[in-house]
Structure formats: structure tokens, C-alpha cells
Length: 366
Image (cartoon, rainbow, N blue to C red):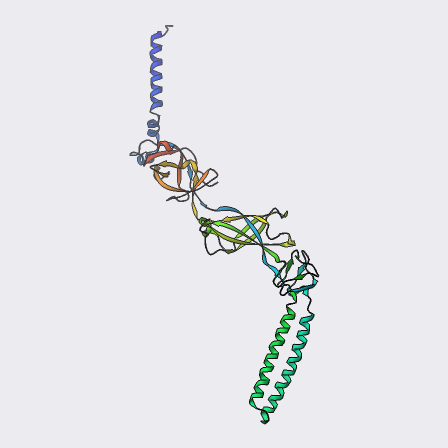
């Protein structure tokens, strides 16, 4: 058997290598010749399809979780003050003691006021008797009009003096202004105090109010009745759930924030006014397109994404970044839910360029 000359084997190998290299170089055109006629007809002017990976646009709410540190306040809080001066003869105030409205908290020595009341009552009775007597005589014409007027005036004066004596006696007693709990008293029984002297704090702690500041940019999202969560180092009972009860009517110019007030139930009287609270507020927002961050491209001083149209062609869409969220971005732009956007192959994109999608699109939301 004759053997093939070595030079022929070399030539044949070179030809095969050349054919293989040409097929690899023109692989895109060769693949395009085998595609269905309908697909090829739609891409005659767009050129060969660029292989890309795409993702599907989803819609997501631009919600935020805002946290701030606030200070606790009692639902109602006053400083008890002495209604008048004198010696303390009875003191019922004790730390943590609960009182109902009208309960006696403190009494002052009141002997002089009781005597003054008795004297005023006697004068009022005498003036009333004189007024009734002159009223009867006036009808008979025995007395003069002047004496009748004097009797009526004396009676009115006696009535006023009686009311004043009763008020002076009432001022010797300090009563609870509402249902609440007293703080530490700053006086002792037997002390002499001055009018309007501070006695103790008095709080209604059935609910605790927490005030905190919200930036003005987030203010349109806040509403009365919105749920709030809070934690405090002074409470070991875990997170508390309350609601927004008040929003200040103006923004503070120096801080660009507005004051919000939230109310929390104080079951078991575990919370104290003045304690610090970390408040967390979930703020809802508008719905925007959401897609993978890899789909964003910076071009011409603006952000854009490449959307695949119904004909399988890539088109640039300018967008505005709203927020980043765990590998995805929320953007504002003319994108609809379900649109396909390019996430791999962005460098080869041109307006109207045909693409070959190599994957099954998945939503941009996570």
C-alpha cells in the first residue's frame, strides 16, 4: 500500500485549520442563516443579535424604616404647688401612690379660716334677716326706699364675704387634679410653706407619650394613627407598639425637622416619664420600577437602562435613581412591570440593536 506524501498531509492539515478558524470567526453570521425566517426578517436592518442576559422589571413600594431617639412624657403631668401659705398638718403624698381626682393630698393649719367662715355665716344670716324684714315693710309703706336699698346692699356684701371665707378655707387643702401618681414630696408634715411653693410632681402614666424629630423630607409620609415601635433601656418587656397622635404644625428652621408625638400604653406602670426611647417608624412610599443594579449604565451625564422592545431590539431608557435596596435599585422612569432590561452585555448595546436573550428573565425585586 502506498503512503500519502508528508507534504500532502501538511497541506491538508493547514486547510482544515483554516476552515475551522474561519467558521469560528464568522460563527454569528452562520448561526443567523439557520434562524427561522420570521426572526431573520425582523433583524435584517439591525445586524446580528448580541448575546445578553436580561431581568424582568418589577414594581416595588419605596417604603422606609426611620429610627430616632425620643424622650418619654406622661400623658398629663403637673407640678403640685401650695394654694396658700402656712403650716402643713397633713401630708398624704408618697412616691408611687395612686390617687383619684379630688383626693386630699395635703392640708394646712386652718383654724383662722374656719373662724372667719363662721363669722361670715353669722353676718350673712343677719343680713338675710334684715333684707327679708325690710322687704316686708316696703310693701306696707312703713320703711323708706333708702333703708330698703341699704338692707339689700348689706345682704349682697355678706354673701360675697361668705363665699370668700369658703374659698379661703378650701385653699388650705391641696387635692389631686386628676387620677394619677405622685412623685417625691419636697416637704414634710409640720413644715411651714409659702403660697405657690412646689410640693411634688403628679403624673397620669396610664399612657406614655414619646416625642421625636422627623426630617422634613419624610414629613409628607407621616400620618396621625400610623403605627410606631419603640424600645427603652428602662423596660425589659421588649418592643412596644403605639401610634402617632400629633404632628407639629411647623418645621424647625435650624434643624429642618418636625416634632412628632407617639402614644404607648403603659400596662403595669412599667414606663417612666423622662426615659429615653428608640422609636422605629415604617413610612410607606409611592410604587416605582425595581430592577437589578447591574442594569444601570451611566451615559451622557445621566443614568439609563436598555429595554428590549417587542421586536427584540434594545432601546435606551433614561431613569432617575430613587433608592438602592439589597443589590436592586428602585428607579423613576418610563418602565412598566414585566419589561425586560439588559443586565449583562451592556457594553455592546446600541439603539435598535438586535439581541439574543440567553436566559429566562427574572424579576428585579428581591
